[in-house]
Length: 338
Image (cartoon, rainbow, N blue to C red):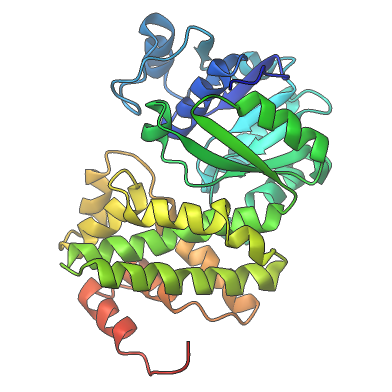
């Protein structure tokens, strides 16, 4: 059943695959949608023929989605804003956009990462830069592969916000016959699950790239969840969140799907590509885990939390360790009780 949107007009800042897919969801649920695009040619294509070929080829967008490259126009008078830029560029973008935000607006983070340097979650970055109350900030996360959602394959997600009223309003605005949002008050857990799963997906991709099979993948996913839970609980997350859609669900989807940028990037490294070659093959699409492994590892170290998989991925991406050496490092760890 499609629930009628209660937000009127919504804005999505970022016309990548995920931002565009959510713009489609919002329009299908009944909202008028403004979609801010960085590139003029992307905005022109969306407005003229209702497609976004660079990011979601083959998907027809609703007429209710209108694109613009003007941030002031995109944000003018809108009280529901979804922030769909990469995690490490969120702060710089928000510093430019904050003067255009309506008072009392609900700001929704779509990015999955921990900021380098500050080690802040994205909701914390939003609060610090904009000065809004934390209750105005929501997080959207879950097993959400953009291409499948844009193709209207059934999917679920988590809308996390400390303000239950805002969470329910977003839930209604995003509810369609193919997309089912669940509300949650645990913003911390939702963000930690979303950030860390990208790193574990890189590890799964590396293992697949060197020819390892499903047993190895299952072990990486399971042990990856264990280290995500250790970090999450240390920083204040609820274990139930990490055992749900925003934790296990997102982890499984990202670690196993060929649509996952992080898994695909790791697989290229496992097959012998250099970091530069893997990035070129990604055609400009961001594998968030490559950067996030550094900030996540630093955050874990600050809480004295052991994350061996994250450490191995970090060594491959930033310290010159080969994938073969990383696999030996992981499989050669001393035995101990689970």
